[in-house]
Image (cartoon, rainbow, N blue to C red; front, side, top):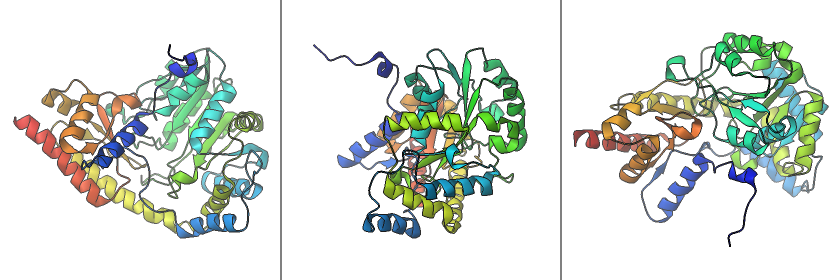
Length: 398
């Protein structure tokens, strides 16, 4: 007799990005020539001064538990970052450090959602948002913004999605998977809607703030709409900007009562983030930021190459992004040309015949698309896109 699991866990599915990455790794282990464009992980090493801070933490014995919500030097570094970059002022009691921004967002969902509460998640969305809401017994509501509107929802769409059950809105800009970023004016329009509903908590995921190249400066929601400060949790981390994915440090600033609730959730799950990683994150946020600019320059060059090359392929259209290290390609024309059923079958075709692993867009709430990560070398990108083009051309010709 099979062992049963909770209904809660049966409501959610494994992350498709992790599944694609794991499958690519298995194929490589079997000797297959596979280029993985699934993982959202910088290919750069953690900058030396940051790694040194972590090493020093070990050598000096800073290897014990810390306060659940994070060490004071890191909380102060986060406060300084928010003030410097986002014009946001927080006290230490308004800061929480977690084991990655993923845990930060999970803590938020668990802290504010009751059974039946609705959370608005604009689609395309990061794959984990809806499942986190489901794990918190909430109901995800996902208004869709397609290519014609730059993958960004309008104020009218937001207003239409709000019901008496709406408790949380999650906004990601620049967006994983699309690379789209909301302008200050667009955020102000969304904010005007949210100001009409004081019960709604807002979570803004700014993880890709520093991987950004749009002419208009990056703007966070509360920077654009300060009136939302009392009920907005601004989320960020060091994983992407500083090539520190494995260090697992995310953080947020927000209302003290919400942060306290999130800290309680964290205290009964993982407790503090790694003490060693916290010391490294202090060095990252307080140190020379030239390393961030250098990595961003490389990501922009890769972005330009990938978007241009994708748009040369029959049946493929890709809008340029404002940031992140993802390209989100509309492959609906190629799916039709190749006789594929959907984006999942298209991704299978590209993997099996071209040895290139991409993530189907349906996992992000956008069927007919695929996400390609360009957080890899230009050499790998040239080879991968060449193979993808060959698969499409060969099938169309046949």
